[in-house]
Image 1 (tube, rainbow, N blue to C red):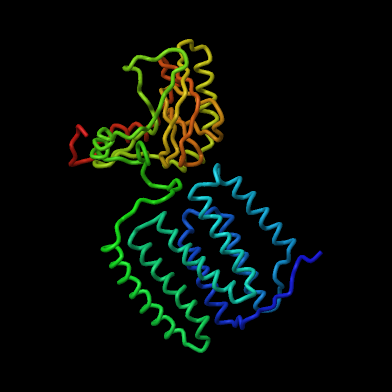
Image 2: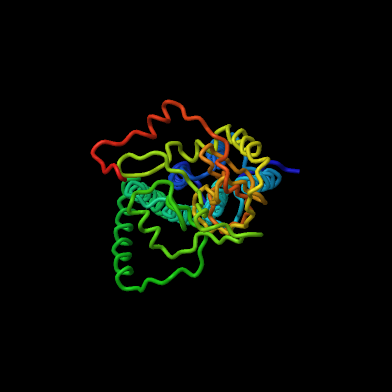
Length: 370
């Protein structure tokens, strides 16, 4: 059984070619660092180290056994990291890992080309997460490097400056062609789609809002929740659906004083849930219902406080503000059962002096009614 295999090439994989290829690989992965799991970045560093040592003839290429172990480990990592595979985040992660494995097993000319083509696709997919000006500039630099590496394969004697100039010229030509296509071709709807991450809710409330956002939400006709009561329907005056609690106002924008990530990583969730259960153990006025919630791209669940979520949802976080959060963002339609205790206020949390001062403080030079 062979754990390593001798590396033979059917084309001259010179040091400049490999350095150019690793630069392309690094630039493509760098665009996805903010949303990739930490273990994928460790895989990237391992691939870089292994590939460099293969070039130095210190190590050999991984054999079949190591490749199988790596593939199984990656599949387990995806299974543990993501609740669903057919969504954008796991697909992009899988794509970056495919690029990593291909960099590791370059033996033929076509392998080199596959790495280049995959890098183009990885760069393009980064715009699904970020469309800022800075990200666009970084992506253009990555495209410039990738195109130069493609030119290098067919012009081994070309200097780096010449390849970069030719790459820049080709990109400028493609920009001109792109503008023509935008003006001439009609804009067609996509044939298929996957759940997209977003900083704002797909349907519902974002993690920060200004007064104009509230008015847009009121005018929206999109379905956010579908509620099915099991026994009795509560009065409309009691249908106060709590999701996120905005407890900080800077004069223009309402937001949480504590980030969602901090709340998720907090160790007080179990204590809060235990207090809720103890406080409500003798409550008799409860309402049972089922919630079908549209994707929001956020962490919070909606319900009538005081809320106790039942069902198959795992890793729920209960906050002192009587919020219920999920550790993973909601990118697909979900269903959960809930119990609400209508006439109960829940366990009373004492405010600290710092919290009290912040809650009663009004920003200067703003409308006090806001």
